[in-house]
Image (tube, rainbow, N blue to C red; front, side, top):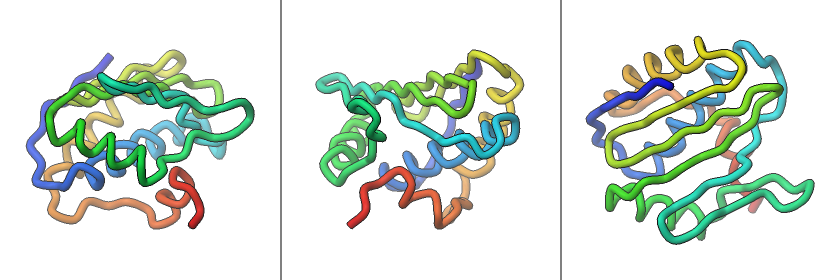
Length: 137
């Protein structure tokens, strides 16, 4: 398990997307083109889960709830799969913790990259990532 404490001027939604993107990107290094799947997201009030064969997508309602919790410094917990890797992560205030089940070296890579990206005014994020985790309009 690796933890990153950071300072960031990003709005909560952008902060969340940067964290999810780099968690995906660094995991893909070992897991290849396997799908990035949000299995579960837990806030203090709600738990969002993928239903059956459907993917959990970050709808406007879910994003608004997550952003409000990020803004208030409430803890968010994520369970993500990519290939054979299961990633458990949490975001509370300006602290991000990540743990992997198969390749622990990914944890360090995620934390190192996020340490750089979260300090930027305009962090790098691939334009094709957002449509993969949000519903089609």
